[in-house]
Length: 416
Ligand SMILES: Cc1cc2nc3c(=O)[nH]c(=O)nc-3n(C[C@H](O)[C@H](O)[C@H](O)COP(=O)(O)OP(=O)(O)OC[C@H]3O[C@@H](n4cnc5c(N)ncnc54)[C@H](O)[C@@H]3O)c2cc1C
Ligand SMILES: NC(=O)c1ccc[n+]([C@@H]2O[C@H](COP(=O)([O-])OP(=O)(O)OC[C@H]3O[C@@H](n4cnc5c(N)ncnc54)[C@H](OP(=O)(O)O)[C@@H]3O)[C@@H](O)[C@H]2O)c1
Image: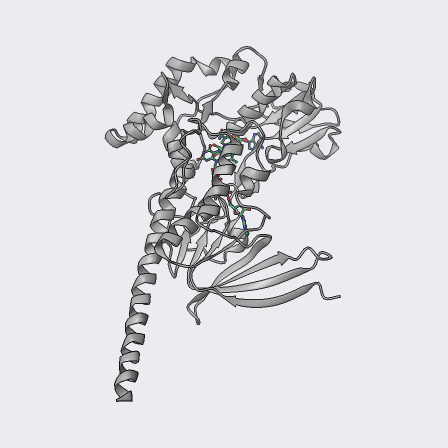
């Protein structure tokens, strides 16, 4: 039986890869410009990260005004920090409002610029759902917009002995809630926003979490005197140099949260904003985990040496008996696995040029949502990209119209 069939398709306008917030934002802005497009999405729904790979208690951790996509604000009745389900509802309405209909179940395998044609060739493998058969489709287009996200794939580090461990091992992207962990001793590996919040959720469900902190972490309060810390940073950055804002943030964190070093959380030498922009390491915005660390409900432990069938040995020689392991070890971009290009994107799957210059490559290549600035960064990329493509589109449509009008006039004059 032939499980594969192939077809080719010309796309009049850009192909956007990924129907997360970034891909939808570009789609909406292109609609405004009158440019047609096709969105390819590997999952069977929009915003698959939010719908399928996040835990139940998740809320946006920045105020809503920094998270709404271009051209359509959040409903006024939404809270300052919308929940995961509110955010998904907003995105569904966003897609419906702009009549964005992605092609689902289409996973892009390769994308390559064909120098001879001066066009992009995008190959995707689409499952038809009938007996596991696959259709390979080649899209040929002039513009390619990469919107596959900074968090496309889970990071699963290798640990000695983990395969012998008898308990459950789960990545944070498969964790939904702590309700199944009542009374269990859980090792949470990683202390980013995921590790902190999973540990907090486990506490709230009467589990016993130990959180692995192998290096250092910046913890900032989500708000200071009712004002969002992120908003404060954005405001200060307009007037002050980055190093000074970094210093101020560390002082504010110390005043509000106290000396976190006392609880086993070392602060990095580099300031939180510089660390984010140079190494992509996100500071933790505390929403309650720190209080649980201070009370001892979340135990902070150092790095891992090796696992055994019922426990873990830590780098300081401590042995812990554990029932489950949650890997809150982060995510990575998957661009290098399918995009055959190395000038604009670097090996880590992010554009080489830092914000605000990493949105446009050569030969019609664009990137949206790789600014390490969350949803606000994605929105700003989307507006730029659609404007850029829209200008060329309008210019060329005008020329075509003029040409056909001239031809029409010639035809009319020839009739007389
Ligand atoms: C737990 C968690 C919480 C977060 N909270 C916030 C927050 O509060 N505020 C904030 O600003 N940011 C937050 N982020 C960052 C988050 O990445 C952005 O909010 C947002 O999801 C980025 O949108 P995106 O469209 O760029 O990427 P994604 O949402 O990851 O969407 C990319 C899409 O591309 C698809 N895709 C990937 N590869 C392929 C392929 N080869 N072919 C076809 N389709 C493909 C994926 O299936 C996915 O649907 C959070 C991230 C995580 C993991
Ligand atoms: N809205 C929200 O509230 C929310 C919630 C969750 C996540 N997010 C966002 O989602 C993105 C991903 O966050 P994340 O927390 O999942 O990932 P992350 O920020 O990349 O953190 C990964 C953590 O895993 C640790 N780690 C990796 N490999 C390890 C190993 N071998 N041994 C021990 N520890 C290891 C890292 O330690 P090192 O630092 O030492 O490498 C780090 O602490 C971020 O942008 C974040 O802001 C947002």
